[in-house]
Every structure is written in structure tokens, then in C-alpha cells.
Image 1 (cartoon, rainbow, N blue to C red):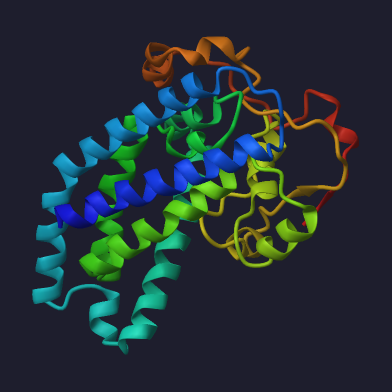
Image 2 (spheres, helix red, strand yellow; image 1 turned 90 degrees about the vertical axis):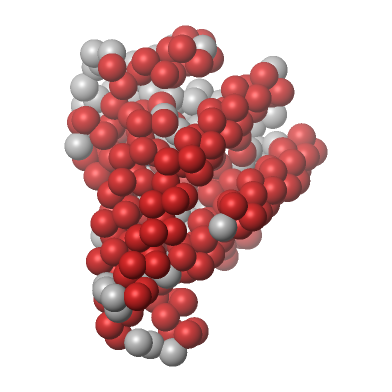
Length: 278
Ligand SMILES: [Zn+2]
Ligand SMILES: [Zn+2]
């Protein structure tokens, strides 16, 4: 069990280093300053969260999945599908849950307080993929236990999904210059970098779109898919922060507990003139 968790950390480290190198060679937004400090800050948050999860949830996860397995509890245990069908279903169910969970993080003000730590990064790159407030990670892990029980997911199906999402999440946050042709092809099935760039825009209409983790069809089905036709300058972060204050770990840690501006759904900038397509 612990070996598989180590495998996730090792896989994340390898993909991160790889994409970091490509970001250096072919950046989407060039001239980034203090990249190493920025990445070190985000990665330290990610590492801390992994340790908290491993200590608090790994034993519970093991006990829960052993119990559901022994008692044939949950949808997939009841259906008794062939292994491949069950594996594909498990991946799709978990990705659909991630879509829903991400979407309610934007919808429910209490959850947004935590999730905005991820969105507050003014310079999105591969390291932003692991920048989440520990509170969000813990709430997510608790709710996920319920989802795991209801769906009857086995331990290896959970670990497989957790391993699978690593390259997808890291890639769609990366500051790599992808030709539009490649992104178009990729986003036909998967949540692409061009899609996730829109998700990290400070404009609320754009922030509240493209929630997908692995697959892009959840956004298309639920009508939250949004891409700009215009090539207007890409901005990241949240309008309530200038950017520099979110460089401090203490500010990020306390962010959910500070009173903040309720973001308006209406555009504040010159985004109204942009053309979107779905
Ligand atoms: Zn989000
Ligand atoms: Zn993101």
C-alpha cells in the first residue's frame, strides 16, 4: 500500500521535472521570474498534503475497501462486471465525481474559500497543479470515502485513478507552448492546457468553466466548456489579489479564513467583447 503511494510521488516527481524542463525550453508565457522559488513554494504545499493524506487516510482507505469487498457493498461489487469493464467504469465514475466536486468548489462559497488558494497563483505553471489548501484536500478526502463506498471501488481502482491523473493534471497546468492544432486534437477527449488556462483566468465567467480533470466531455455534456476565439492576453490569478501577497505561505494558509470580496459573475474587464465557443 505504502509502496503504491510512493509510486505516485515518484511518478509526480518524474513528470514534474520533465514538464518543467519543457517549460524552460518552450514556454507559453516567456520571461517568468524566480521560477524556482515559485515552484518550490507550490511543491512544498503539495508534499505536505501528500503526507497528511498518507497518514490520515491511507489506513481508512484500506479498511473501507476491504470491508466493501468482503460484504459485496457498492455499485461495482453488485454489478460484478468483467475486469476491463469494471476498470473503465471505475475511471469514468471517479472522473465524473472529480468534475462534480470541482464544480461545487466554485459554487459553494465555503468551499471556494479553500479552492481559491489554487486559483490565486498569478503565474500558473506545472507546479500550480499541486497547489491546494490542505483544508480542500481533507474535505475532498472525507467526501471521497462516501463515493468509494457507494460505487464499491476497489483499492487498486482508486490507486490506478490517482496514478493516472498525475500526468493529466500536470500537463494541463503547464506553461508549455502547444501548437493550437495539437491542443485541439488533445481536447477532443481530454482536458487540455488551452482549456485550463481559461479556468485560471481572473474573469469569473472564465474561472467557472472547464472543470475537467482527465476527460473534456464532462464539460461539454454539462455545458461548462469554454474557449476563447480571441487571442487577448492571458491572465492568471484572482482579481482580489495583486499577486505578490500570495507568494507567502502564511497568506495562503490563512486565505480561507479571511473575509474576501465576493466575485461577481459579470465581467469587470474588457472580456465582454470576446467571443467564446462551446
Ligand atoms: Zn477551479
Ligand atoms: Zn487548476
